[in-house]
Amino acid sequence: MAITKQKKADILSQLGSALSGTASGVFVSFKGLTVAEVTELRRELKKDAVKYQVVKKTLLKRVLTDKNLSGDMPSLDGEVAVAYLASGDDLSAPARGLQTFVKKFKEKLAFLGGFVSGAYLSRDEMRALAAIPPVPVLRGMFVNVINSPIQRFAIAMSEVAKTKTNYV
Image (cartoon, rainbow, N blue to C red; front, side):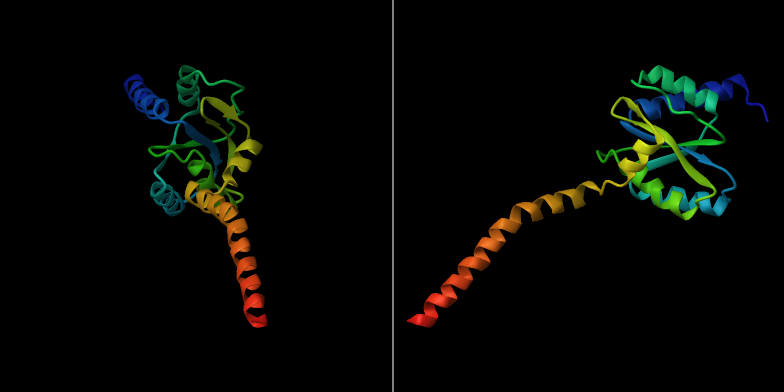
């Protein structure tokens, strides 16, 4: 069904303002997703402040051209949707959120590429980005790395103290 020029202009302005205010977005190809599956996908992505929108490829390309991203735009084959970070600073949230659904709906949903911090990323780069844990988990891992030598030193000193008290 054809979209009127006014409706296209509305979509362009809405999508343009949404994507201009975000630093991260993922393009996915979908085919055969049911309404219930898309609703579940949107609900889960919303928890991480990620929006999911189905959009015409020509309109998406026009908006992305205006965004002036560096690199080569990934090929947008099939029916295309974009998931983008609505708010927050976790740049990997859209890719990570979609990764669980790409695994769950293998034949229906696939990464096409995306953009992060002003540059296009390929399909493989988006998969790698999706494997990065969330920021709180990364902070916890960092604290654990810093804490480990201190903890081992304290255990060693405790063992030394135990051996010294046994000889007295």
